[in-house]
Image 1 (cartoon, one colour):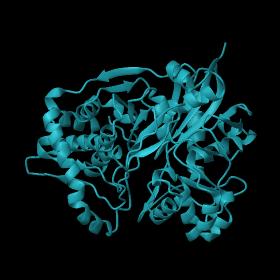
Image 2 (tube, rainbow, N blue to C red):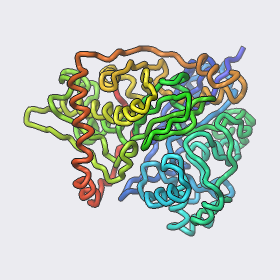
Image 3 (cartoon, helix red, strand yellow):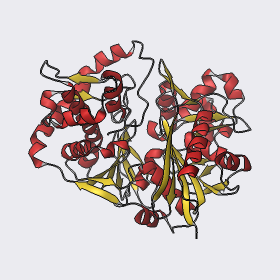
Image 4 (cartoon, one colour):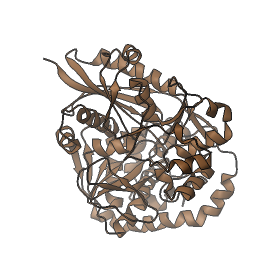
Length: 491
């Protein structure tokens, strides 16, 4: 007897995770393979062929680890984004992929938002595509389609170029695109996430060591996949999407109307999402460990942070290490430690970084709550779920219980949920979530820390307006040649 599994692929910002996940949610085998990002002067680019090489490597490792009785019944990729891949008629990239960290298309984002009436966060890869059309005519002339990262993986796996809709991007009218200089024929056919794109091509099957024709299911942005993999179902269920960037989203039964909030249809029937995606809340701790403290043992640093009282003895951290997205949408924002004294040590720095990430989540969540949409509990995801301290800080600062999934790699599990549903192993997504997602721990907020966190959050909210002009002046200076790129370890 064989055990049906999904090859679930999560292309993170700096590493690819692949797992063989049973249709009951059991992770039978998992592999991680890193790949690089090229950073310079606001540029952040990746080579799609490096993604594919990572997938081939990861799949080979899975074959070595897995029980021979497993049968792959579906393949489903999810990925970071919005990351834009320009492809030619053969599906090959005409230039490196423009990653979501890239800041060169800010003007195109503003122009598209004004022309279409869509908020920036629903424009997806279109600003980067328009930037290519305007600035790289040779590459644009060879391009037949612009794809998000997960869509490119879907093309490479199945041979079908398709755009997933109902996720993090909307399609403006084709006349608008043509008028702005983005040929509408380069925007591919739309499909729903979870639709079967086709069978695994012979070439892809040979690379991955899988049977040709294995169904390939359309994926979506990894943050949306995490919503599925973390088990969100009911209004008020919320998530910290973790990873390098970090993000917050909460389910609602009706469409929220909240100025400044990111609002979109959820990847679940009858549900909406309100929230926001940040830039480096997850990567900030890795930056502190690797770049500032020269690779200090992260477990030792977390122990030192745990010994520091709530509020970090008056130290506050702004996690704007690569500009910031929600809720301030300022690519020139800069990170800052505020309140430093000779009495602060590295444990204080670490505690402030952990608290800064939680304050960033609350900065997005509070306007949603103020608009009458409840936040009843927070699911955490990604590597930082392994830190009980960080999870407890989030519970304390947001004032809600935090639930920790059994499978912390919620984007990968979300890909498995989509894949299993797409091939009929479950009748629909809610049924798949019920069968495949389980919680390992629930952490209640500590009322003893409420007063200090309330005071620190007020300070946190006041700092960006006070420092914005200085940040913008400093933002004109050359940025570092490297930027945080690893998924947050949260170890």
